[in-house]
Image (cartoon, rainbow, N blue to C red; front, side, top):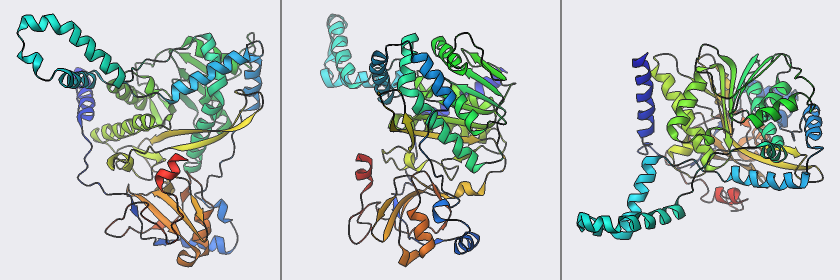
Length: 482
């Protein structure tokens, strides 16, 4: 047992010390635009058996609404509250969560402090006698600390009291549910046979994953095991599950709540989820230990979700790479990435150091933040990791990773491809034929395109270096700014 724990610790340390290799980095390339349409799909399109907008890689995501039972329960909970104050608190909570950064490890903090000390004093402190150094040390520490506070965002864990939990309900419940619903829908699309009976939800909050799972797998989902350190969140989640009635019981076969993760991996779950929780852990070591523990409790799929920020993407990429690494070290068949990546290789967003996170967006109806309901968007990063076994061939279809740019007589799509390269394709009816052109034109951000894509030219060109003649195509930076 001791040897096993030491081995696990060494894996963690080795992973944390590994620097990303950039010796084989290639720029995002403009692809050769040579694609092949599978014959069966071509025949189906010719025979009008399927429409282009309903191609096998399309998700046709609609605006997500809260389930009627959850909406009614939430309205009952908020009925006696001061909604104007809760809306103010909700906006503060939303802004705080969106602007959060990963906590800086002690070693990096110490290194930054030493650099600031050198900036302020150079080598003068080293040349001082011990007596002189003792005399100025306190003042020097204050100066370094003040400068450090301006350069480093201090990280603090989020804590919710009863009022804060209700503020979270107003500001985040609908968005969290929409994101979980979209991710579970993606799982259902890529693996229709997967029907989880049991789900563990780490950092469960208001149990939005519980409601999303009930919506996607209503006939099979029977056991929900939630973990959250906030009793206030647990209480409110149970109240919502009971219909908003404090005297009612939760009408679900198995609804369990705990404060901490079980220490044993003997009990496993078909689906394990961590949504918007990894960034609440105090350092990289604890994040990776937690991810390893979650993976140990997973018999089917592990889902990790964070905000669609650079920090959120980094937390997801770090966890993804770590699980793939430790699963290979076990001497068994390694884990697979089911979504969104069409491959199990290193994330090109990381290896190419682009500074642009891999994100997707969920459209939903916001019912609480204003007096009237209105459409909203929640941007997120995620990964779905699968235990060794068969994986759908459709997983390897290229993923649309930015908004599709529809122009006059041509369409520009940016893809993550199965060889872990980011590529841009410019589709036109003249060059690719009617079917390919219409498939691309009807696709959306987050869809997959069911085409066989040939490798790019040997010398790749920068992503947006005048991709077509008329020059009216937005660049990646333009799209991001929008």
